[in-house]
Amino acid sequence: MKKAEEDKAPRVHEDIKEYITKGLIIVNTGNGKGKTTAGFGVVFRSLGRGYKVAIVQFMKGKWMTGETKALQRFGDLVEHYPIGDGFTWQTQNLEQDKATARRAWEKCLELIRAKKHKVLFFDELNYVLKYGFLPVDEVLKGLQEKDPMAHIIITGRAACPPRGRRGRRGAPEECDHDSYGNRAPCRHQTVTHAHDAL
Image (cartoon, rainbow, N blue to C red):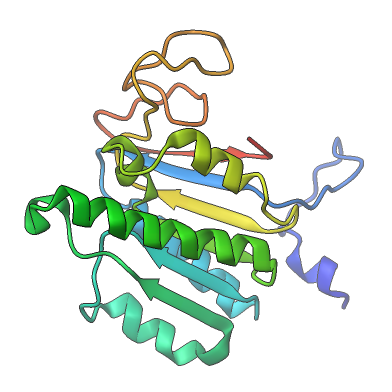
């Protein structure tokens, strides 16, 4: 059986004449639980297929987690960069937080431009955008450099742009929209948006 046939879902849609394979930008946001967990679900499914994966964590530090222990079993298939110093209320140092966010984003750009991973997981990137540690426009520009077949997963609460920024629909955005132009009921639940491109 060919690889493409193995990867198709076990069902037939007669109205779909052509299958299109492409990479997505997936945003997990909202105040509910499970954003990082959902991201790691995609990571481990991809590793199970033998795809290369890279993970950059913007806030979680180098403490040993169950995910870290599991990732170690996949050897060279995975690159894991827990760059964070902890959450902002732990560091209490604005300049340090900004410098850490910058260092993590530079690693993200390096991985995007290398174009050797099927999945890139940027955990908690939404938080550093919310706090203004990185410019939203700079991040959006960097994400556009991704390989067309690669998937990028972004997590964190309040995927919101700066006040007054307008989304694709032209409406003023506050905290009921994500940074990528979609309306998101982010106050009470976890929601996922998938984008072909930004």
